[in-house]
Image (tube, rainbow, N blue to C red; front, side, top):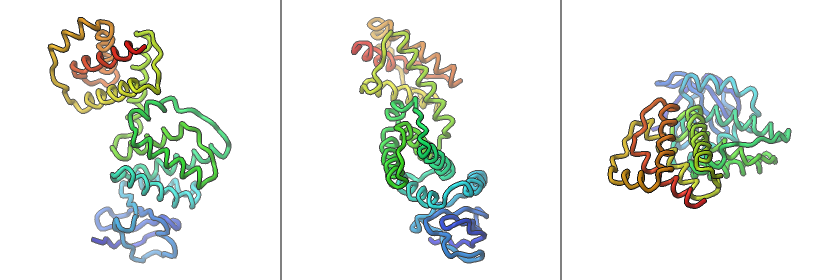
Length: 280
């Protein structure tokens, strides 16, 4: 069903403010959407138009305030990138990504033009945790580099992957970053206690990171793992070092998350840790 809205203000060729029956004032974003349009004109909005609708009051205000500082060709290009991300991820994006990604790309392009290099300390972890988002972010970075004739540092892929993950899961970037910092702390504890240097490109490292991430998610959602009493006795006896370290990690997670962590997580962590120790 086509929704007919009334234009209140044309902000540029790609962005208009319109009157919506349900959401009142909304921001419509689409390539060429505002071209040759005037106030009071009807404008249709439906998914076939490949138009994004910003209805959240805060996001709308932030986006409108951001526009004067962004080159108009970048706004249209970001719209194309968001359509690409949505198609590749196969999910609708939370509208906060319009503000976040437009803002992020504007700064990143500016940094690249000034040849300001920086690193992303969580790059391996992000790739291990969000492989699909990471692959899509790689393609996005390639498109930006080609279109803008610039070169991004590799860390940029990780940052864009986090924006994508945030938009498809409705998690805030703050929470995602908090979890990544916690995972890094847990990795440091593992390396110190087992006296080894984990290889970040190793498949077992990826498995450990994914398990820690899922354990944090389960704790956050209050999902139990189920009891494995017999296995616990075996692991406690066979791998006391890894078993005790697993308990230490669980305690750190509980303190940082301020939530209970299912005790059964200890068993699976012990197996991951033993695998890493055996390999070293």
